Image (cartoon, rainbow, N blue to C red):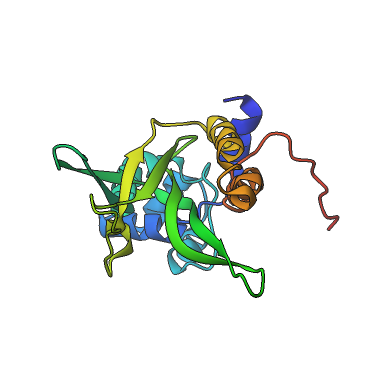
Length: 220
């Protein structure tokens, strides 16, 4: 990571500020002690605790070092896969906030109107942010029985066969999904071509730097 990227990350608003402050308070720290650790005023910590203001990551470095692992454990999803031959089930607990999710539908065209309709969700991509510049992709496909029927459930997360990627940097994540968009464009043209835009939009909306973006800042 370059010095510029590190600086950008330190200034990025931390959206789980209130949860982190509440966690530190529950662990026995006072607002005054938190203010000292974050090199700010107690009134600022009070605003963080109430959720009226967000701290940036640089201010919370010490608290993230102490309690970040606990905060990440509180934010997770459970995934699974089933081996086709042995029927062996594997379960995966992936920590970190979900910053991106996209579903690929089976599209069918209405013979009368000519319009396309979304019939069944077939595949899904999920991206977890796991702290610092670390992301993980969960690639999913619908679980299908030998007779061709799809697993159905009131719990949506249980209907997907999942595979988990190795940890990726933000740059690697964008490159990976750019390539994936090209590969799937023949099956899902609209989704494949839109994927590079969608992942960049999600990254920027969550405060992560993305290379190759032309900036046109407002003048205040």
